[in-house]
Length: 181
Image (cartoon, rainbow, N blue to C red):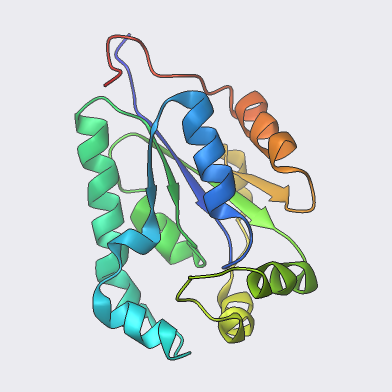
């Protein structure tokens, strides 16, 4: 049986805990990890820093870069964990074009909790003032996405429980030794 790469896209609005959960999953699974923020062109970062919400035309090239990175990792025989807001179903559809199995882990929670978390962050270009626009843009996972294996998890759970749930429910495991870098 040929190894098929799996890509776990840890999604949700800013402040939902994507980086924390992705890093923990990457460490436990030994999979390559990337932050979607690293793929943004400077023009997108500048807009967000100024409190200007991104529009679809800003996001498409960014999402294509992310998809292409996942495909390159899969072609090299590596599964990945990636943070990406993936707010709209159309964005998730584009990301799902990557080679391998693409699953979305939606970290979901109340606006008050997320806002509180964002207030406590330092050094991030995404200001808390953009949270309402992200919440307005967010399209929850569809029944088809959930049926295909994606998950929606409550961010009020401790990170260890979220990571354990992802691994248990998705039955994912570390890469085979022959594929590890």
